[in-house]
Amino acid sequence: MSGGIFFEIAKRNIRIHMLRSSLAMLGIIIGVVAIASMGILGNSMVLAVSESLRTVGDSVIITPHVGGSAHGFGGGGGIGGASSLTITEQDFLQIKRVSAPNIAIPVLQTSDRMKLGVGSDDIVAAIYGLNPDDVPDLLNLKEGGYNRANSGCLVGSKFAEDHNVKVGSRIAIGTDGDKGTLRVTGIIEERGMAFDVSTDSAIVVTRDWFGGAYNRNDYDKVVVKVKNLDEIADVKTAIEKQLNRRDTIVDVMDTRKTMETLFTAFGQITTFVTAIGGISLLVAGVSILNIMMMSVTERIKEIGIMRSIGAQKQEVMWMFLYEALILGVVGSLIGGVLSLVGGYAISSMMLNTTKYLFVPSSMVNIVYGVTFGIIICLICGIYPAWRAANLNPIDALRHE
Image 1 (spheres, helix red, strand yellow):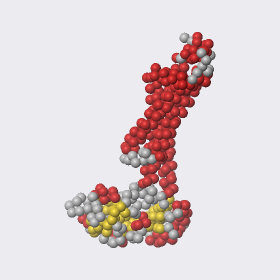
Image 2 (spheres, rainbow, N blue to C red):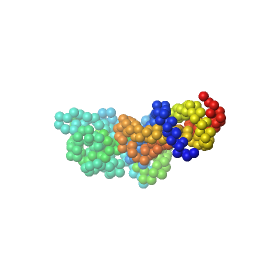
Image 3 (spheres, rainbow, N blue to C red):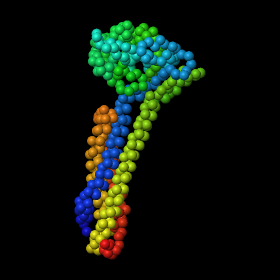
Image 4 (cartoon, rainbow, N blue to C red):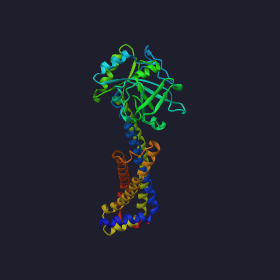
């Protein structure tokens, strides 16, 4: 007999039991959507974090050890200022020496009230003090120019957007502007999350202005920009050996290692939620198995007639495999299309962006989901098909 006949018989049986077949496909659809959507979300999260942290993956961050020995005690002016523990100039020079030829950038940090115009309400924002020569190595500008004078400052892109600040705007620092007024010379490109300096909602002033305004000369942290990423671990070890020889006075963080840890954690979360989707697909596979077994039981006499007029075991087996394949392919393809909708909705709600939806590493999850759905259906159809093919033709004809 022609294989096409058995394919048509398989389609006919699905049409006859449309409700039962549709419910089986619904399980496959749900499973594929769960796997693909969760995979898209997990990949989008990794890409979003990677993009947010792309500017700090080459850094070693040195901060004062909170439980360390006596250290420089800065004035810490402003509201919610930085910790009184600081890194002294002497410590910074040691860091600079052992990390050479890499660039070591000392950072002062606090927060204070500021006013953005006559009659405007006071706001509170972070303030970073940096050496003007170091700023181009750490920050990129969206517009305007770098500030080199004590009368100017840079502002983060979110700060500028939220408060309608432009190049040339003036910001009065301190309560009633008692720390002075600064002119905005440039707007910093958005950096997202950062381990070194989070400037998106902050302003950046010169180190000299910061020291004069807050009577601070020691540093809150030091950022070492490592030119060769393979040397990050060596730079970290050298700094720890130099400064923590007798006592732990600084904490040294390798941002690349931290990023790898974050990505591993995201990968584990993605695997877990995808596995949940896989379980739902396995449940759908059991439903396919049950339906196929029912189909075999209902059609025993039909199978006996086919065998008696010359149908081979292999042909009968393929007839039932065709049914499982049709259910799997149709259900998985519908699930794949709906996965785009699910991925779009989840990304919009949880990440507030869909820019990572159509990248290859996200779309491949739909391929995985569809393929897995089809394979599960075929596997679950093998036993019922084998049982049907191995029925005794005479016994099948006698079946009532």
